[in-house]
Length: 96
Image 1 (tube, rainbow, N blue to C red):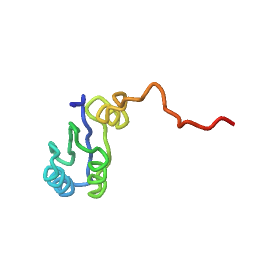
Image 2 (cartoon, one colour):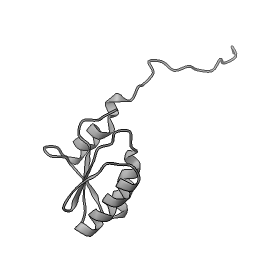
Image 3 (spheres, rainbow, N blue to C red):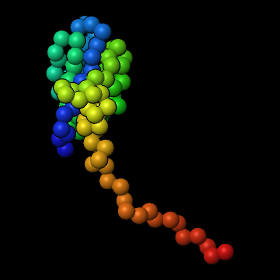
Image 4 (cartoon, rainbow, N blue to C red):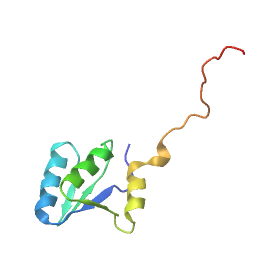
């Protein structure tokens, strides 16, 4: 399921951005590189892994164009799309 934006990570230098870009690409993400920044769309990919890979290379979560980091993350993760059941089923407890 496609999400709206995606997330962007900013890196301390272009070398670290290139390393993260390469690993993300190898793992099936479709990153786009722009200097010290790497953008990722998370169409079915694992957000946690992307954050860990970026962090391992010194990357920090940044907002997409026109958004801050939190808005970008919320849009990419699709938290509003997680189904929550209307009720829960409790086990049958013996009558006391």
